[in-house]
Image 1 (cartoon, one colour):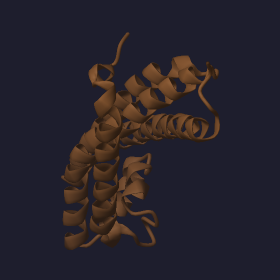
Image 2 (tube, rainbow, N blue to C red):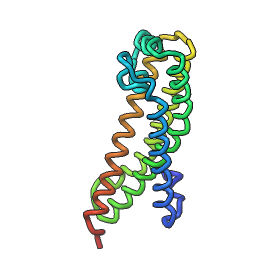
Image 3 (cartoon, one colour):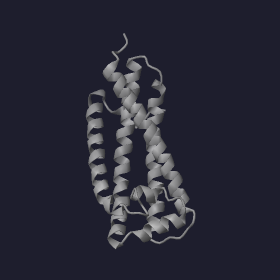
Image 4 (cartoon, rainbow, N blue to C red):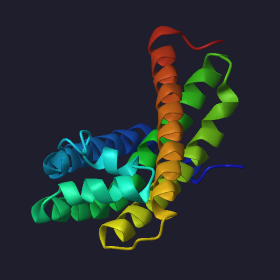
Length: 183
């Protein structure tokens, strides 16, 4: 099944990838700045600690460790992440498609993974959105016990897909820089 990004003209692919990557990095820096007040003893990794809390008890302990200002930062961070998830998943997904093309030109194995991984990055974005909704509901006082495990498993799916996508995209980059195209 073709990925919508495969409709981008070849002359525009790299420019779109660079733009999406720069936007991802800018948003990542902004989110790190916004999330700085969330780091404390209960949440040593800030919002990531909250994402991986895994239980309502742990999630509520993290929220309780934040003052009102930190809770506002958490809410803003979760909201900003809805923009970030679109941008990073598109950047890494397009990177996977470009990597697949680079591997194909060099007759390397794993060519077939580019398109499924690009779709997988959109699945990561969906998992990230589910996670954000669950964490926002908890932050706003919803006591449903299933929300924290839902956020945890959504985060795990997201992180695994992002990791695999990044490794594949980097493989494509390294191969394209080191190996000459096959004839």
